[in-house]
Image (tube, rainbow over all chains, first blue to last red; front, side, top):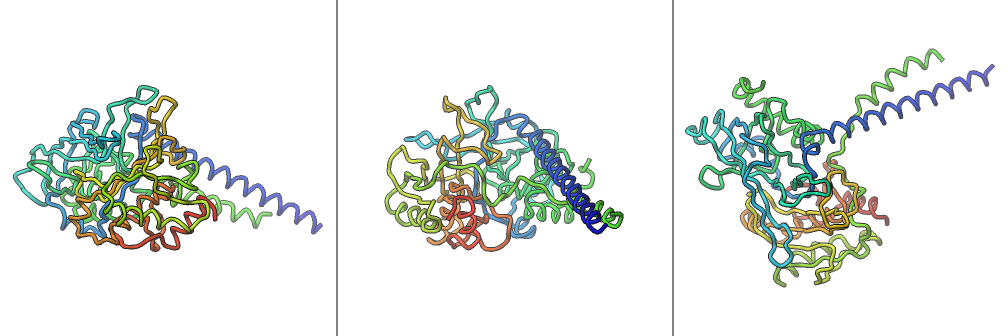
Length: 216
Length: 187
């Protein structure tokens, strides 16, 4: 009798283990599918680079460093924007790159208030290469922790001035926060990187009055 | 049997709520096929190379018997190393690996799982390092970080000390980095 009970327990534990493995496998599989069907990977062959950036310890540091904090919308997809690729003359290797993307300012939170409703240019650390991949798709090069501005989405941007009406996003992705839930790639990034997630949550909380009307 | 059924939903809920992410892995399955040795070719003047780049590469030697970074001033080296300027005011360094087809066309590298058969370019941005008044040891640390990427080390998820964390630091490989290097390549 005791042996039968023991067998039942073993069978039960095996069943539970199998179920857990199946559920976990499905979760991982579906997560990968979600990632692969995101905005970027569905459109481009992505060359991920691995960069070291200035890290902003908290929102106060990010805010203090920003020349301009705005709520803004990109005008176009990155494919349509002006690009810059610098190559080393002897090897032709890519040594610097960016895309200049125009955005419509909707509200100025910090900085020159005259820029409200103006168009400013944002330097993104991402660029479409001139060549195509073996399937004829565009090739996008960017640091792994950067997600490109998505046309139609609305962002809270922390910017450094680098020229007349030209700005760069602070700390790669740290100074770029989608506020209307339209940027799936950025949501995935926020889930995966604790530091970015904390910065974004702090910013959305601090500026909740300012961003309220642009959230949907 | 019935008493165990109580635990089933609890266990399933635990699994369902556990995080699944492909970001910020400490090590990548992809990378160079072999790193013992792996050669780097430096495109800077000798002073810069000897003061910053060679010491940064050496920081990774002697940790694992399977990893040796060696300088070889030849275009056949797997890693090309540069000191350059950038339009991005917050960028300190970048490592760009390449995975190509037989015709040299780029393939996707976002899964961190492929062999970098197209080599890699490692760039330190001296304009931003100067702007931030980085010391010699901080510059070496920055290059050490980028060489760590060339050895398939990512930005660590743990908060303990690591040269692979983002930002300005003045450290070499720490316990976590050494452990990750051995985990990726062996002892």
